[in-house]
Image (cartoon, rainbow, N blue to C red; front, side, top):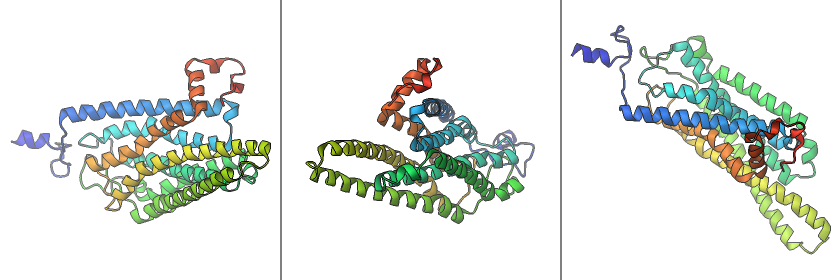
Length: 327
């Protein structure tokens, strides 16, 4: 009996202060390991293709693609670091210590904040491109977008440090026993800053984009006979912008579907405990979004499919390959 009781403790030598193991079936544990390992490698590979494509080919050096590049970097970090560490949370006990526990949550907060910020900037980009196309080239220059992306990442890092300050200052202060990984943050502040304000902005901007897009489509149909040559050019430009808005609209919609459950669950409390199946599921859903984004690009963007072919066939190693036409 005594042996069984010790086997149920994370640290049998610490009888009174050790957490109790919450064991999963062996088959379920192996399945989680295999799924998380697969999605981690798949996410890293796909987002690396996006990063190489946009960085290498000069035709893809546009303000919108720079925002996609920033989003791909955050998704790449999720696959490279966050997902492998999440495998440890499928274990019944946290064995890496309180400091690693606090530091582990820092990167997800940074990447999530950066992803939300990138989504807001993508929504603003599409809003100006569709609603104010004449001013778009002057408002969204490469230099301005680069500065915006840099500020977004700086903000994400600073915000994550501030929201996790108490946990980093005194690691393990919210643990009730050894073998537990629990953090505590101001849930109300985080939900308002990281969820309500940016998500509301994204939804409002995209609703406005699609209202204007429908209005433009009707306008084009009603004036089809006026100035045919000029119309053909205008229609081509507007169609490309509307197609980009539709594609990025899908990205935003998938983002909302993956992120909303996590914040909805958070409304009931922020006790993020190791071994919690509900927490593992909603957190995995957030991470799964990092894998879905490149698949959306592959489905909707011909330039991404062309870039993948050039990358996997090593044609990008040829001289002047950065000038290849991929559009």
